Length: 251
Ligand SMILES: NC(=O)c1ccc[n+]([C@@H]2O[C@H](COP(=O)([O-])OP(=O)(O)OC[C@H]3O[C@@H](n4cnc5c(N)ncnc54)[C@H](OP(=O)(O)O)[C@@H]3O)[C@@H](O)[C@H]2O)c1
Image 1 (cartoon, rainbow, N blue to C red):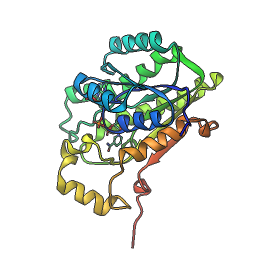
Image 2: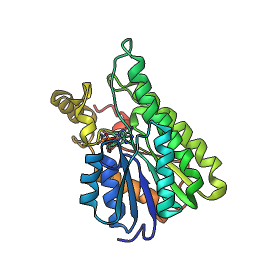
Image 3: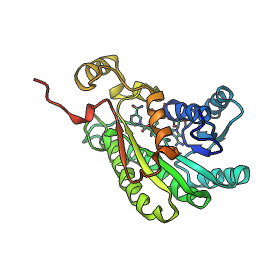
């Protein structure tokens, strides 16, 4: 129960879903946690459930000025931090041939540019030996209807993350990606992938365990990778999908 004792963590998009589950797990393992999001009410509700080891700060990851303010606030609260979970993301869907500039910009601004500049801006206040996790997606490498630009945003983040692992190694900062498949959060009930019919199809035909992941399961992996138990792991990609991306042909 103390894998992350005395560690200070920032989790973007920690007010809901995978980020919230990670905040809960981190606190259970002894960390102090800062969570972010855009919706103040969601942040306040999350912090009241997480308790006194959580602080909520409103910051839109797509706005670099918000990230600058976030870093300044975290620095004045804690000085430096140990764990950075770059998790904030959205999954807007449009079919090829119908992709709009608005959705393209939104996906890239939050999932890629936002994630990159969250990392860049926090680097000066990371302790040597810190851990960064970029939450990507199995979509970076696999097809699902309408997710071309979402997938591209996560593939781009994966490429950035791998370079970061090399360039930050001199400071013993570990950088890894966690790539979930369908995980049961609010995200999967939106857009073309959100209907009961599609969910039933995915569970029956695509997901080997006939179910989606739970945010708590992803949180456990993020916690392991953030802890000293993963002290020799950097530049790695961890899929968490019950084997869905193996794409097995069952006869
Ligand atoms: N659920 C899945 O099946 C799945 C699969 C693969 C990868 N992922 C990835 O996992 C991450 C978390 O997703 P989730 O399923 O937990 O989604 P979620 O339940 O919708 O939660 C998303 C979180 O991110 C925050 N957020 C969204 N846009 C933001 C922005 N511009 N700035 C700051 N915070 C922002 C949300 O709060 P506000 O809306 O209030 O800002 C919320 O706290 C995402 O990067 C997602 O792409 C999810």
